[in-house]
Image 1 (cartoon, rainbow, N blue to C red):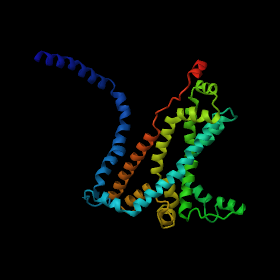
Image 2: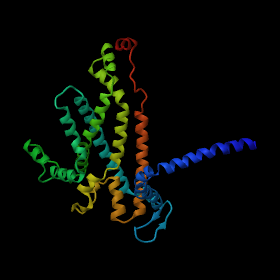
Image 3: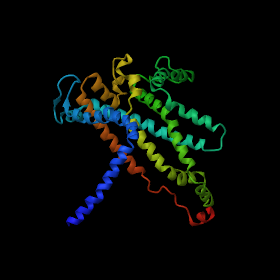
Image 4: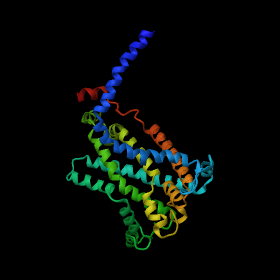
Length: 328
């Protein structure tokens, strides 16, 4: 027994020596990448861990930190403004994500066809994603303005009644949803297009041999092959939708001159905007941290639901034996 332990100790000694030599040998590389990890620890990991602690405290950012246990979370469940923000976020997420992903899929399918100026269309569709969100929100505020907006001018020209986009509850939600759709449709279309280009042509040939029409091929071949990418876009869109902040902050934040956060009846108050208002306007960092972790739990639940609904069960479509033989 003693011999075995001695052999293991003797075997591990050279291994540890090699590892130490490797660390010393590659220290310039470790030193080169160390700034990223240091910055991440200071501005990434520490705020996350500190926010967990703050969610159990009452702190205004300057005075003494007072530990209050679960009181912030208990108040969170009774806070009607928080649940109003949750409802607004979910409504805006649904009316923006569903049409956005559908339009992205249609655009990707059209770009996948043999059309002219493909490169121009791909760049044009992706430009909104790299446009400044602040500039975009200001432009959309002018476009949907109740008094001088282009949209209401177009409705007037068509002899249709105008809509108070920025002063009614549903007008506010639709305006924010249109901004989200405009910004992210092109980005998701590029992802779908990359996935479409990876689908083997043999599968389409096999579908033709089986006598499948356009729609049967689309739903039985294209959609199953795109399912992993669709799952990715749904989850990222869910996380992005739940974290919606810039658009409502620019249009309906406290600094917009209206004197109210979130617009009429707080119809544009999203979860992150409410968390920002509580932490940095009301200086209640403990409650703001509790809202942030409630949002994290909500995003995790929705991500799991999306994954369970769209996980890759049948990524490879079933192809008949005759079609396989023809494809070979």
